[in-house]
Image (cartoon, rainbow, N blue to C red; front, side, top):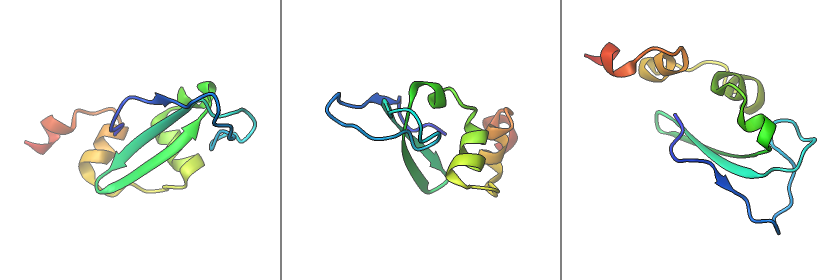
Length: 83
């Protein structure tokens, strides 16, 4: 799901958090859902948000149709399900 570790934004970059829009963004986070890549800038608090909640409520992805990704979001082992 997360393609790489979140990276801290440089101090000279000032932008609002994509999720809450109240706090300044501190990190850039990259996610991958199948072939869809998503990049968002988040504050410290929103970085701790559950991935499913972030995707559904903030980014607007209501349904994940890829079974391995859906299993990952549900907390199941997608490797075991694929075999």
